[in-house]
Each structure stands twice: as C-alpha cells, then as structure tokens.
Length: 361
Figure 1 (tube, rainbow, N blue to C red):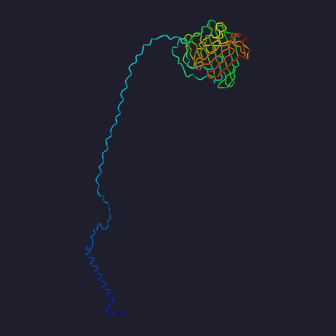
Figure 2: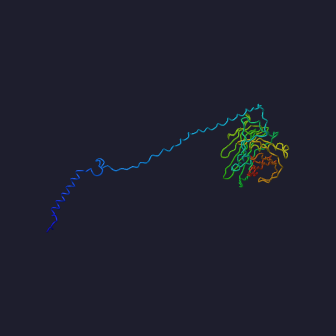
C-alpha cells in the first residue's frame, strides 16, 4: 500500500493514541476527589431512606367529664298505724237448736228407695256452697215426734225402674227387703242395671217405742261408705272422713226413713191429713240433713203389680241442689211404698214402680 505524501504513518498514529491514554490515567490517579462531592466509604453502600415530618399542631383542649351524681330516692313517709280497735266482750251463750243442719255437700242420687246404683251419671254435681261442721255440733234439728208406730211384717218388694240422664232413658230393676225381728230390724235396697252393675244400701238397728233406731247405714257401689250412729256420744261418724254430724233421737238413714214413714202412717193415719208436714233428720253415707215431707192428695195408681189407692208424700227442694222426692204409700199393703220417684235439679230422674210382692213363708 502506498502512503500519500504529507500524511503520518500508522505507527505514528498508534504511538500518539498510547500517549494520550497514558496522560488521562495519570490525571485520574493524581486528583480523584477534586471533582464533585467526596463520598464517605461507610455511606457509599447504605440504603436511601425518606420520611415525612408533619408540622406540630397545638393540642386540643378536652373538657373533663362531670363527676357522677348519686340519685337518692326519697323514702316514703311511714304509714300511720290504725288506732287499736276495741273489741266488745263476748258473752258465751248456749246456741239455740237450728231448724236443720247444713250438709258438707249436696245430696246425691243415693237416696234410699229411688236411687239408681248402677248409673253414676244420675248423681248431681257437688254444691258450690259448703257449710263446715264444727267440733262441737249444735243441739240438733227439729224432728217430728213419733207418738205411735206400726211396722209391716217381713216382705220383699220388687220394682221396675226407668230413668233419664242427660236426655237418655235407661231401665233397671230394684228390690226392697224388709225384715223385722223382736227388737231388731234389717232392711236393704238393691238396684241393678245391665252392663253397669248393682248398688246396695243397707240399714240395721233396733226397734224402739219411737220407731227405728239405726246403728249403721252403708252404701256400696264398687266400694263401700258407711255412717255409724252413736247414741251414747250423741254423734254420727262417717267412714269417708267427712265431719261428724250430731245424733238426735228419731234420726234415720236413706233406707230406714221410708219404713219409718210407713210405720207412722199405719199407726195413726188420721194424724197426717192433706197439707200436714213430717220432718225427719236423715243421714246419708257422707252427711246428714233434715228432710220435710208434705202430705199430698190421695191418688190411684196403675202399676205393674196392679191398681192401688195411695197416699203421696213429697219432699220438696229447699236449696239449689236438693232433690225432689215423691213417695206413694198403699194403705191396703200396710202403707208399704209402691212407687218412688227422684228428680234432680237438672231434670234427671229415676222412677220405681212396684212389680211384685214376695212374702216369706
């Protein structure tokens, strides 16, 4: 290759370049910190951090909370004490004999001759008014004095019975047995109904100049309840744990009362004209009450056992739950009861009509 005249050779150019490079290196080593900021060796590798500084604000004044106030309820003024009541002195007086004895509960359809034993639906509900007996009973109710009595001979009377309860009628049979010995008697009433069983009421006691004097009355239907007459202690007690009742002379039970009336009518029928009253203190299985019968007009009855002239006695209700009791006695049979009808306050009833007379041989 040919080189132009006046131009340097490549060797000269290479030498010039080396010379310029050496001058630069010497300049950098001689003055490294003369240009820019001098760096701290320990800070050269540290991370760069930033933060915001908020200007200071003046504190906001806070009002202090009020102290809790205790609420005190005013005490009510004391109640004035009532002035002492002066009680009058009580003077003990002997109580006068009341006209009757309040029962601890109303009568039920357990009434002697006309009460159905099988259908318990015939029994009335308990009375809302109950009079409690005291430990020392009063002197006893008034009772019609018996001046003479003529009791029938031993006999068994059978009855056909119809009844109505809550609008439904039913049929049953009944039997009255009467047996009198010297100084003693034994009587019963048994009522039987199909599918319902039977109920039996019995009365035993002695025969006195004043008539029958019961010593025990029992009413049995599934279980038995009894009343015991204690003339010595002058009280009547009940197995049902009801309060005792006072005993009075001439007291009867719900079976013997019908035979007592029969004996009184048979002895002196002229003493009992129409409109007259007969009062008998009558005892049930749980309580006692005074029964007053009114003599009604004479009636002729056509019964299954035949036609009979009768004298009717009616026990009319005195209280709301009392039963109306009607009894027809036949003078031709020694004033035996040939028909009995019991009517409850709600309209339920039972009616027994004589169907057969059986006398012992």
